[in-house]
Image 1 (cartoon, helix red, strand yellow):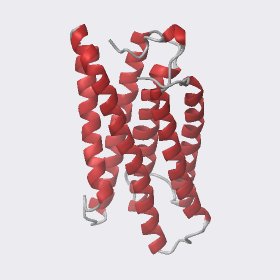
Image 2 (tube, one colour):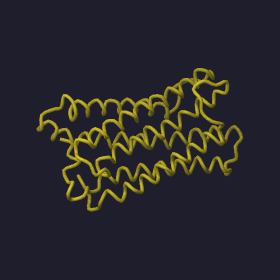
Image 3 (cartoon, rainbow, N blue to C red):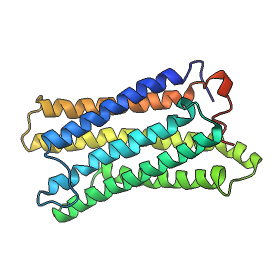
Length: 230
């Protein structure tokens, strides 16, 4: 499942966008929102963990896990382990990010799971976990038969792309939701913070797009079987 373009140059652009997105969200939560903390009298500092961990974990590290098969000049089995470990880190950071949002809501007497963003978030992290367990069992250990792996691989890739697209879209929705709350509480609609949040969302979407395009692109000729995962 590859189109007539090379994946590797796209991964370079994706890496640059990942760095830009990580820096931008850090500037937002550290400079404009006052920092991050798991325990704090200012409960907003607890919430600030949420956008950082979801973007850095689920989106950026998750994207790097997806691109690892196309961007790393390593043996297939090594790339498989890297793919698995990076996705595990993404899931863990995503879970901590979601827990931070619940903790903030609970300690601030705010209702949980009242928005589309939160509903999608729980659904996505659940699907992400199911996808990881499925991939671990079928492709890593105890590992299915070659026939089973060949049959399952296209569905594994397709479902992974589907979940990742959902995650990127929901991240953009989360930025919109938070910015709407901030603007209703007084920040300028065309001020530097609002522009930063909007551009961070744009960078997030662009990063996700390049991740997906890298999956559809071709690996180098000498490594054509590297994404077979079997």
